[in-house]
Image 1 (tube, rainbow over the protein chains, first blue to last red):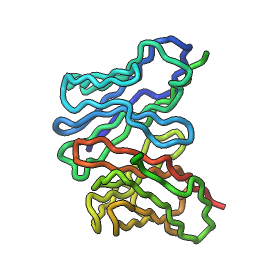
Image 2 (image 1 turned 90 degrees about the vertical axis):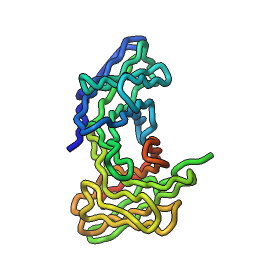
Image 3 (image 1 turned 90 degrees about the horizontal axis):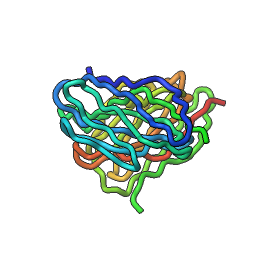
Amino acid sequence: GDSVTQMEGPVTLSEEAFLTINCTYTATGYPSLFWYVQYPGEGLQLLLKATKADDKGSNKGFEATYRKETTSFHLEKGSVQVSDSAVYFCALSAHYAAGNKLTFGGGTRVLVKP
Amino acid sequence: DGGITQSPKYLFRKEGQNVTLSCEQNLNHDAMYWYRQDPGQGLRLIYYSQIVNDFQKGDIAEGYSVSREKKESFPLTVTSAQKNPTAFYLCASSGTVDQPQHFGDGTRLSIL
């Protein structure tokens, strides 16, 4: 079945450091890929998405490129801020699956220190 | 503003009791979903509904029930058969298949 694997956290960084969170997936066909962010005590917010190979999703300084050859969708940000402290989830939506079902990775907690 | 409203924010259940979590959306989305999140873990799908009066089991449906009588509403009942209900419950909705899911702010359920 479909699966998403992302690096375990927590990831602790200093402000203005470079952030990378690795995400790889297994799916039949060509899924859409997403990064969601969850702040403490809240629901998930869509951060960015990519729907086909070589697409680059970007938002709020975060970027991720859909790499079909390596089945990866790594999240990057060049200079993190304290406000980026959150849990980040990689997810996929397989086009053959009914109802736009999402398969999530386990989440990566990021802590940015001033 | 359009969005998804979950209530209550915190809920406590006594042994042997059924409790119902509310989820309402005004995004005019056809599909709605319920997820369970345990501490330090990802989300697992409980139930989903693509249209009114229709719903399907997700990966962990045992001990839960849902209804979809209105497009805007998708309540989740945690029954007494669910022996480990303590978790954070998230409701989501989406439009067409290729559109991303939008999430509510969640309900935290605990056992008394």
